[in-house]
Image (tube, rainbow, N blue to C red):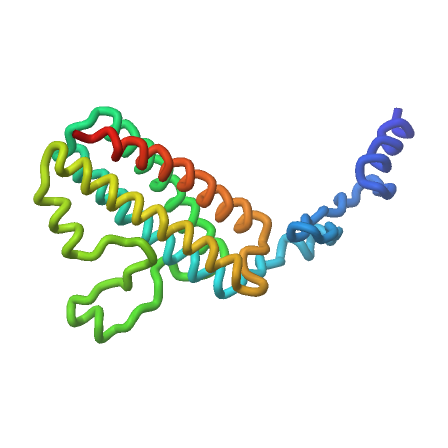
Length: 211
């Protein structure tokens, strides 16, 4: 029986592992590169390598997502369309989940969750910088003052602008040499791109139906 078990371990790992020893750990490479095998002790101590652009992307996207959630909060009390409200709830659920993931991703790598920004601008009330597609304070004030069909129209145009900015952020990330190559990072950024492209098409159709 022991011989048969050892045989199957050999097949699964590609090398015989002596009893009492830890199996080697296979570490996946970036898309298009080979995997590597590392010793368990070395793997346990390894800190995930991360590109600076990946960190900036995650920090910026947390800030970006937070505005989308704020917009849906307004939709709950000021919008008219039930279909739009249902879409808004899906957006806030998915983006809240993504924010939790991004914060955990940053903390696991010992990186700050918030972006570095100009201290003088912050003290002057400038706050965090606007990411691509984010609504200005004036746009957010106009949205908050609207109601009914007028609100729905402003929400849709604003969220389409917002989502388009997120697509630009993904494109900018992948344009930077060495950025977005971590498999987890690559899959996450690609999923944001796919999801928000699909939602943009839904919102464009809804916008045409508003009377």
